[in-house]
Length: 172
Image (cartoon, rainbow, N blue to C red; front, side, top):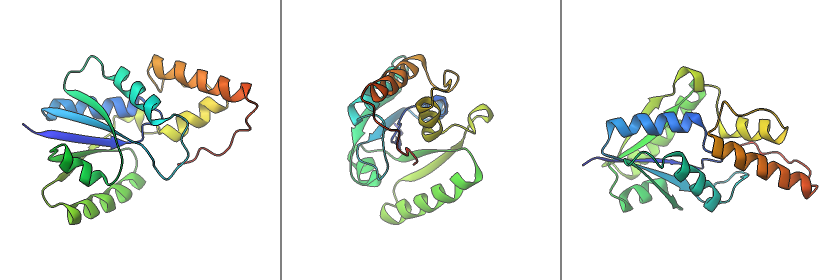
């Protein structure tokens, strides 16, 4: 059995993530989507909220499981006995970042491979940052995220407006 790890912050999960995870589930026996708890960037959703949104997105795919994690991704891959780390590539700049990360992970753990899947053409512009920023400005992200994520974004933005919280940069 080949277990693949698809790590990320998924803040929020969007159709690009759904595409990569679904395609990976056709290649591997199990895909573990691991939601990183404390990245070095601003987040809109808590780890628990992100995990719940990802779980809802894949509730009908028995080959995809969802969990949270912290620490080094490669250490978590060993902990769950994953043989592969799955990453998605949208644009050329993603390649450089993912290439460096794959080399670093290979240095730390030669027994774990990195597999990069090219995103579907219609998702090349999608990033969680793009989704968050459009949502914060009351733009329509309904074509970018599943309905339950859209509802969560609307609720989050409404709560921020109700608290009179000035929008801060949500850049990755």
